[in-house]
Image (tube, rainbow, N blue to C red):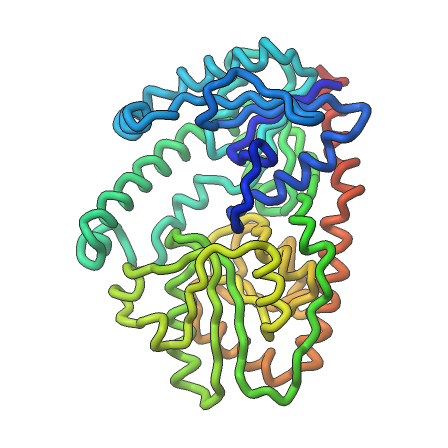
Length: 411
């Protein structure tokens, strides 16, 4: 069976030794699927390489280089709403060349899903985030675009305006994509419910995601010492407001206020977030919040194994791989109860949840985990058992193949 992927991640194409970028699971899935005798895999991706296709190992790559010069990027930034048709025509050339039996699109955020307009080949969309609900949570409570005019630099204001314009456009385009496709792959109650809103007659297939290989092979988390008084917390987020950096700062301030215990909170994925420091008048370094920037998987694992707990502060998420990775190595986790998180955490058994934007509850839960080491150990163990089952590589490969066969046979 010939399967053509469309994805926003370079995966293994000219792979570089870079840090965490949120798409390591794509590379893991490529490695698992591409070596199968019953699948011929091709991948189409946006990439600056000026070649039509490139065969690397078992995979044929189609890098689409529409924006590989400064001028092209500038035109796209200014007139991005004009480019959906241009992109779709480029994707059609790939489809016509590879002639797949099934098209597998990773995410509805990009314009890949518009390919339904120009082909009858069956398409399955692998849900990642869903932009409509994300746009609804784009700014945290008591925050809006005017705050960026007040607390950000000129460059920061321009970037936020640009990001919001792109996000709004992509969310509207996503409505068309979700409403006009039939087959979807997802993994949470939340994404299934949202899909059924847009496409009531949709065929929804459960399919989990393979995580980065380093986390499968890592030594399981264990409590370093019940006697150490320093609370060590770890979080991985990206530099967007809805990932909850403001909740980290507010919680750290409350930890300083309500406890005499020392703590350190290592935040990976960002190296600065001056907007929130200015708006909240809370400085990271003054509240023991250390911004560690992008780290490799191995660096993250070491920090996780030295920490007491993992905190996920997001205002919206489907199934964040950072949280799943923490569960896979057996950490006790605390997360906001948003989006698809309840499909990942069973409250009180595989983790703890709080309402979004509730620093007081989060502060309380952090102290509870630290003061009850046996509960922390049990939460981590049960989370690891559940995550090991949920992210079993062989099961996920079979889930993908079963979806391909099902929609291929129904075409």
